[in-house]
Length: 496
Image 1: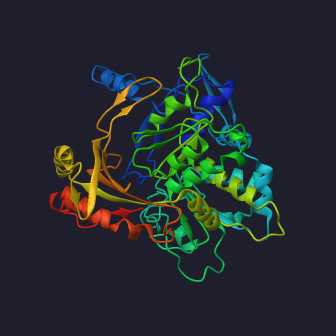
Image 2 (image 1 turned 60 degrees about the vertical axis):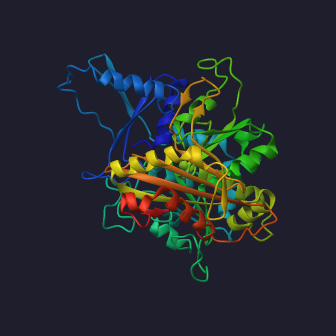
Image 3 (image 1 turned 90 degrees about the vertical axis):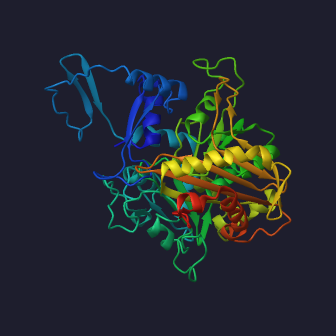
């Protein structure tokens, strides 16, 4: 079993790298898995990254011309439990290898494992990691137990299951690392489904994290403390210097358009380029391959590079996929760098987050997901909104003045391609944002995603609940879009 980031690592490193022409990844990702649930097929190119639009469009074009397909009968059974190389009729080579060795080997070059090992050995430090019965279990064991010397108690739901545990588990077989579905981890870390503190905190680990089904997403938690994905990305960028891979400094960073602008503030201070791309990891690929003589030898170089999405995806140019384990190790590296003196009290995840806000301010942020909505009603809502956009600028609604309103379009600075209709972005004069986007990654209907963001300066009130702060924005957005009347939904399915 290969995790999605591990598949990228295999393509990029095995036999010197770039030997396979690509990889097919079969996964339910963060959606419910199993015989009666979701299943996806994705193609990654020879650089280990998701196929860009120009490739997927060509694949689709070819599928319209298929007239026949052939089946290879009598192919011998290969022992997938034993490492080795098998030749079939002297023509086909099948390699069976340790699923974790390429990815873990790469991560050991990116991070200072000895420093992290010292952190984990501290008596006042404890952690848990929830693999949510996805593919990450063997990788978690290899990294945390075998390499970093953590106790077995660190591992939660570390046995991969094809249905991610099924509907009778606390997550209902939905291996999605967020406050709604990672129920066991959230409770163990002393918070509720809105990230607020619950109980006294006694016995709660100092650090917690979770992975989704194919291990490319992550959720970061401290003791009774939730770190939003947008803040996590910005904090990693601000502290990147403690990670060996970035010892020469970051040369570029990027976020998806719906992700909060917290990363932009860090990039501005570091004086490095910060790109805003459409949702989808493939849009980071060209930026990570910038200056590579195999692809874009004449473009400016933006690597070492760091990027992420608000949908719990974070990563860097070490592979061409978002990498859940990378994000967790990045946080452990930051914690290790701030806790080198064992005689001093432990600097916590909460303290690191609050210190970051004191420097950069806080981007209060929230996402409402309306899942399984009629595709027709969702499309009607988006169409109506697009028609309204030209009339909004300069007007006011609920005491807020519209600044810019657009149907987001991305002009790739590396290959000069253009991607249109990537979501409706509405900005206000006070820096707040509302974003509407349709997503079709689920197995039924459409998902309407509503993103809400309000910026507070370092001198402002930084200790409010993000869910409460953005409620006025949500009310405005629902009225503007007429979402409830068009879809029949009065409440979101998930709030993150």
